[in-house]
Image (cartoon, one colour):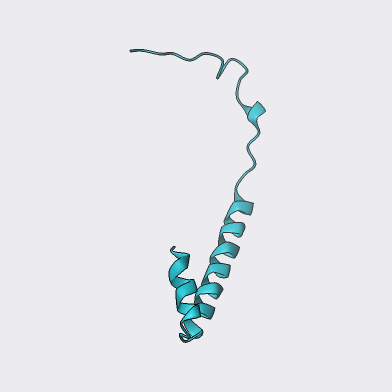
Length: 60
């Protein structure tokens, strides 16, 4: 999102209601993302067998 548009609108004496709505929707989105991230399972790096990730095959 281009924040210069928001700051320009707030400086020009525009109606503050859209800015309040924008901030509220951004807060709601942040809360939704935080909830989704908390629901993800925790993956430990030790869950893979020890022989994986030791070699890289390169073909040209």
